[in-house]
Length: 174
Image (cartoon, rainbow, N blue to C red; front, side, top):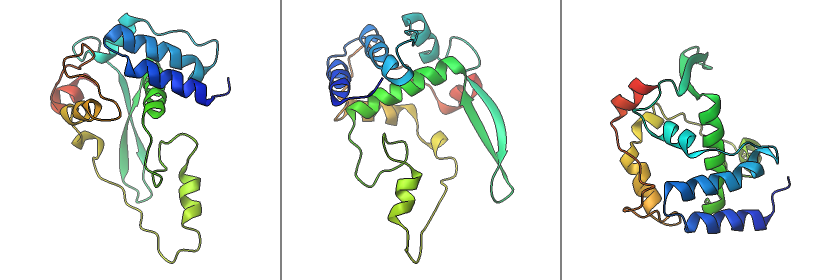
């Protein structure tokens, strides 16, 4: 299915009206066929609840290591199939709602590392860094606070609000 502005507007409008977990489920199920095609199987509330609650279920991520250019190893935590599908669909929804800065290239719809590289062709210097342990340094409270601000505007009193847990507890559930 070809993504059109009308689809993005539809997702954005549904997102703005969200008040409950059921509303979130509805938005995800509107978006899923846009991500995976017309034969996409809808999410159900049980699945959403299972992945959202750290006290339910066990393995949500498969852990493995890959070699870096330096020869050192990088530990990867890849989401299991169901969680990956949920994350990919949620990412699409958030990209419909959020307009990134023009300089942002990574994880932005219709932009890539190639687009970023093209901007630097002919430059004398390009500075490339890898932030060590970036994702573990971002806690749930900070993410939730971002969702309470524009353009997401999720209400603090909404039943969409997540359960908070410490990073150490989160790692134990992986």
